[in-house]
Image (tube, rainbow, N blue to C red):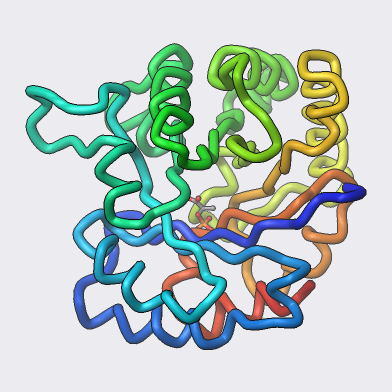
Length: 250
Ligand code: PEP
């Protein structure tokens, strides 16, 4: 997409202990100019590693983010973390509405939108995840689901600075299976037109990431598709060499 700095983002999910900080360190060292001026890099480790991870990145353009936040700034919500807490740890991004959160924790579009608004209030950039399931795709509903999730999960106050969309077909996550380039192109063109219809010129610049089984071997092809402004990577973001190979595909 013209005038857009792509984002290559890693989602570590519930993986990573202090021993994994070596990987963050290696990624931080690998993400350097001149490529970092052109392409942004982000790792979202588990919340337990957030603060120490940001401390490892003080000399690196690598950004650090969280995988979820509560919709409220504070209060009686045992086990949750707020967007303000993420910002307090020097995190700059938060993923909201990942399909695993939607499934494991029954998160609705309405809740995901509230979480994105909480992220904006804490001056974080929210990565709002959407994507159809295998059954929805088989039923020919992929674009309907994308349309509904995009309109209901993304706040009206979204801008190219505070919001990123991640399109992750649920059936492509962690399966090794990816959609065809044509399918990705069609989905991303559709999301772009929806964003432009709703947000005007700003909608042209809101980044739309592709996620689902991105790996070093398919990164170049997927990142080269029109309206794909980067990737959200699960499994292949755990190892610095894999993540940096994908990042280096730009
Ligand atoms: C994800 O869960 O965000 C993801 C894309 O996972 P994977 O790359 O492992 O498919």
